Image 1: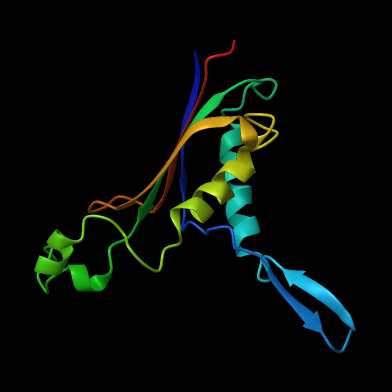
Image 2 (image 1 turned 120 degrees about the horizontal axis):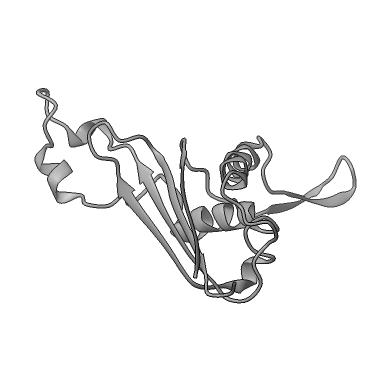
Length: 150
């Protein structure tokens, strides 16, 4: 079994669905997917870290994929003394404002395509999770990719 594990620090950016509209001035339909380039920069960070761990050639066959996204807790989860508040203890996982799990996973999986595995259609099983950072733990994503093929 081949296995690759790495961490990419930073604030995760989910893949955005394209926004299609008719541009009257240009007289044609346009689709915007990443107008500010935030997802592209996040994918580049993942790709650069993955390069350090990449196999000589992309894997063929089934590949398991796990991405655990780590997010900072909101200020409201802490008391004035810096301890977890009742709200912080109640909320075990990030719920809103950090991105849908499938869009976070897609940004990560797309970044590894052609480098770790040939195509993201090889991913089976795939698991994506969102967690809060522990005290002193950086935001980012833990990635594990495994292949049974040699």
